[in-house]
Amino acid sequence: MTEVKLSEEKIFDYIDGFFAWDEGCTDSGIKDCIKREEIFNYIKNMNMEEKTKFFKRFIDVYFINDKKIEEGYIFEDVKSFLVWLDENGLLLGEKE
Image (cartoon, rainbow, N blue to C red; front, side, top):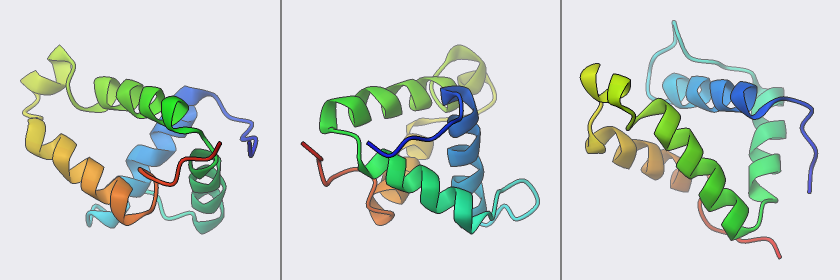
């Protein structure tokens, strides 16, 4: 597996930033093509179980915990994120 020398929390921050940028939030998003490629390759090289657990934790932190729900996040936000993952080739393509 491609190694990324960042904590999971920092990887999550990058993913959130890449998603925000691609969704049009250029002031709060992240446009770092090198880091994006590094992190995307890291994710693409996870097997399906690792990837599922990884994104489950991400969704718990960024979308469906009590605080985020109070802030107005809904399942439509999760759906948008999953579509974005799929469009970037990060959902499928299990690596054995």
